[in-house]
Length: 232
Image 1 (spheres, one colour):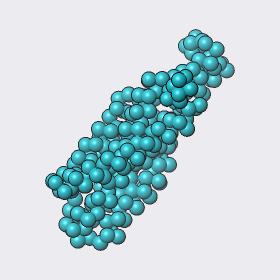
Image 2 (cartoon, helix red, strand yellow):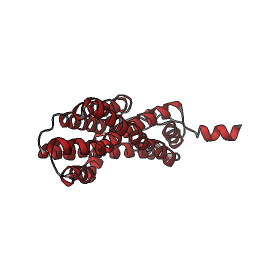
Image 3 (tube, rainbow, N blue to C red):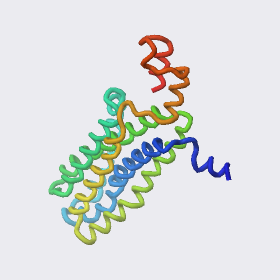
Image 4 (tube, rainbow, N blue to C red):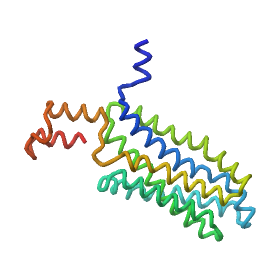
């Protein structure tokens, strides 16, 4: 019935769903790859003889560096836009996992995974959250709940996939596959998002602030013009 359809289609257009889908894919690829680290613990310890604490410490480095770099990513997102930051995160994170496939020393684990993946994780969440905040207001909590499903999907899919690849082909190939996944998960957002992207909600809000006028018809600096700019 009508109430059920309103629940299934909560005032979000097809274009909005494309944006939400690209952001969900970013979360799935980036977080799924990071959360796969647990299945690499035993193979790394077995091959190199490192202690479990030494190997696990690199995951703590990811979380710590991601949190610290996230502050900088917030500033850069305001300045350069989400698309560039997600592209940077996909590139650095993908290279980090690719370099992990050639791992030979403990310091490399902290450089490739701890530092590079930590930077990529900061370049994931901050731009995604900023994009949601900019494009969606009335439906913001709904959009956040949908996009963060990507974390759960990544956790459901990539660790089992990594474990299978490790069992069949070894951990080095598994890291190459994760590198490709991180690279690929960023591509739709880089292609489809831009600093001037708007959702249907944002368009409606902007038109309301404009009183139905085209922004180009209003003199720069007027109250109407500034209201439109602040609604972006």
